[in-house]
Image 1 (cartoon, helix red, strand yellow):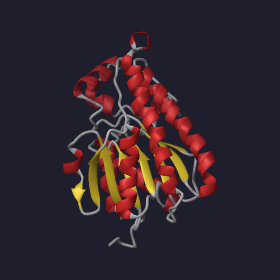
Image 2 (cartoon, rainbow, N blue to C red):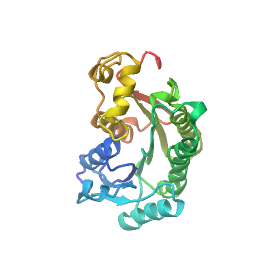
Image 3 (cartoon, one colour):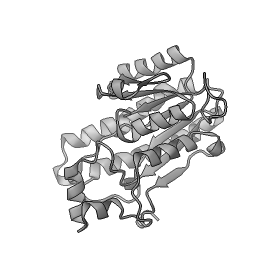
Length: 257
């Protein structure tokens, strides 16, 4: 039974890209805050990584419309409702410049942008039935407003999901569904950031890897658990009167500011 003192007691949540990193941390945090949580990921490890009462993982290719819709409908059929969705799944390949982008461009669009739209599309009918302040959280990126060289496809898709969220906030407010975007930056304890990618990015700034991890204004390293805590808060009653917001969690980025 849900603990009535927890902010997400009685709620059901779905998170994409939940096998590791921000997605897994978010699944665990929402569950700790009272929600029944199902994580989706193409990585088979998700079924082991999220495996306890009220917290489970399902293998799903989110670029497969039929599979994604089936997974969402199954969650609702098993748990009776859908109250929170977190669109977290995405890819990032560093060092890919406009003049060299080929299939990777299409893959970024397919996973980062189109699959996010489909996730919303298939979830919205269920969210409209929720009586528990339904919420959509989309994971953006600092790159939506402050892109860097060698990240054209990623930056474009993160700008795209940000615009998608803004439109969704306008369209879904009459139904009481809140839509907000979190913009993390430099969250390095994720599968996206390989050691090679870290070293390349640090070298571009003339820094060591450790210096690069804390190059924000507050000189602090942002962890997946920090992002997860913010996601849970934004999905809860503290942000009950907020929609269409774009919230940075980056330690302060001078280019964004």
